[in-house]
Image 1 (cartoon, rainbow, N blue to C red):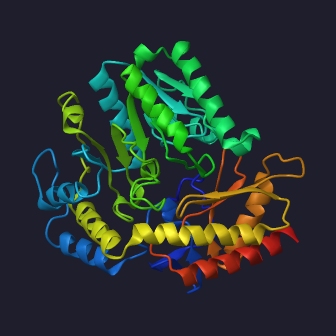
Image 2 (cartoon, helix red, strand yellow):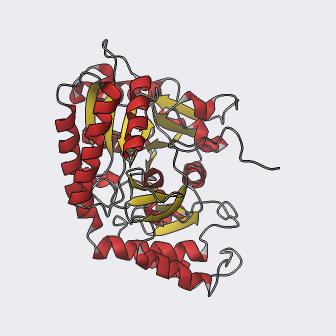
Length: 418
């Protein structure tokens, strides 16, 4: 008798039977408020009618039109629609299936375009589980353990995680940029570096917004040394942070390559990299492809997702509801010493748990996480030491549903910490 791999463990005890908007229903009919959104995937909520209709119509017409064999209309339409939301000058798109694949495609492009080998990533970053993407990932030992040697040509520099260091944001940024310059002068000579890769908000590493001045410092150094700037927008893209792209919180900043996935098709497997045509055409012949990339059904769903995001004002909703959620989480944390820090950008909210000495406390985070699930609120944990509880509601979440989530969160804190 076959069974799932024993290491494939669920973060919550829920066996989902169906989903609707911000809610999941288990096989017994119990309703849960889903503030995980499938790890930030279901941007338009579960089974948005417009997305469902687009996928159903496409399934009946063409399921698989392999895009290096034939071309199909959903792919062409999606490229056109993405042109409306991509930054000026970013006008060429290549599709694959997952965030990890897209990250590796961005690395391949950067190396081929520059003729350089080294990629610099930042401490605590998560870029995927496949071998190349895992080599760039330091959000937790479980991603890298037992699979070495890792892909070569990767160097790491500090991330400006101010709370971790006990510094102000300016102190953390000064340190991180100073240490990056040291890396460029020592272990990863600037003349060998093809690209920097960074998340606009540190995701699995703890939901830490990347300071604007740090991103500006990366852009300046990239320009000075002929290095490409890759923005890993797998989790932050498509409105999640209250701007369409997470890097747009920094005025005037444009990456060379954008990596996107998760919210792109709101549950269908689809990811992409986007870059200026002049850069994308430097990819070597045959270096871009894949059996399932740009799947017709996923593309049809992604077109509908873009339309929903625009028609329903979901980017602005993420900003407004995110501000309300952070404020409510801070209010609920008053007087609770176990909560060391609360941070957020749009609908990415992190609550960091610490012990009496200020050290990361993964056990308490896990206890509160479980208490929330028992109350009917589904959340996830993250952070290098698993001590951050994160809230990732779908972009369609309403003010009333935020209130519901905050009420359940407050009960979970009382249950777990009393």
